Length: 187
Image 1 (cartoon, one colour):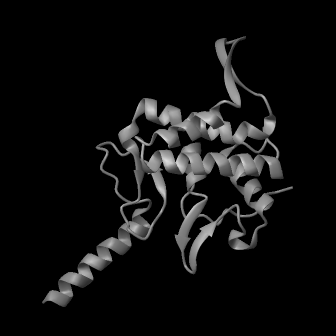
Image 2: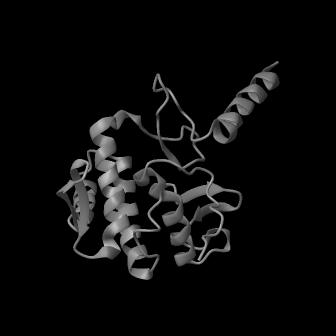
């Protein structure tokens, strides 16, 4: 089965942030890829997300996987919103309890493989683990779009670390147009 087109305005972020970006604001209010956005069923939305993150070949799009992914999304949303929130950290840890990294020896040398107590936790665990990797490498580069009306998150990979918008073509352009309009009204 081929996944439907991804209706989200921002894709391609690291898995943890891409999971957060399955909820967005747009024309007609809030949208949720896992709750009927663009006319997709919940499982079809999950299929789209698994395809877009490269996890489709490793995990099934089914109801238990979706339930666990929604748990991880809520945990990550709380942790990103307030990294000092102890209860949010506990929620992320609870997701991480369902998997582990197993060291392996491959033909190329040392390697690692993720193992899960229940495969339906795989995508949720992968997103939570990715969040830890982002925190380990550059926690200050995990950002929310500067637009008050946008709820999207991104990993700032700009050279100087000053990216403010999820997309310069969307939110950034709206902010520039709004500032321009305000200046011309003042004159």
